[in-house]
Image (cartoon, rainbow, N blue to C red; front, side):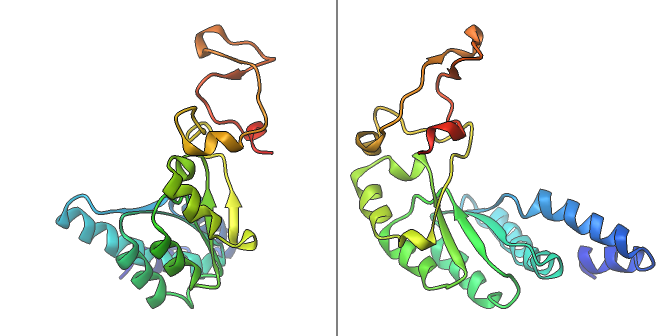
Length: 185
């Protein structure tokens, strides 16, 4: 019995409680799912539980927010098997290559999220240029993934804000080294 089915049975008489429970679980689990191939045993476990997330996506009718690093083949295979179980999804902080981008774009309900991590190299910039604007999500991943002076994408940054180190907080400035939503223009 899956965790979802178990929860459904336990909360059967409380429809509003079940919806609240599912929303809570969705916020925790669907907000950040990663498949990163680090070791075989861990990946098998992650892959198994990644598959189970589609049950939640189907039950809650919420879109999925996903993270993929060097796992496009497995990731897209799982999406393909579950394409009827979710309404939409964003592959967050995309940094993979053009071939992987095209695999994701082959799913009409998938969007690609880009941030500073997506704009580090000139190859990254070429990959991002190939994402149709209507399938692209601009994200900050605040406070992480800013566009640094060493990134190829820095040449496209037009907005600047005064910044201070966090130890010298100033309400008129952003915290140095953090990527804040105000930086997206």
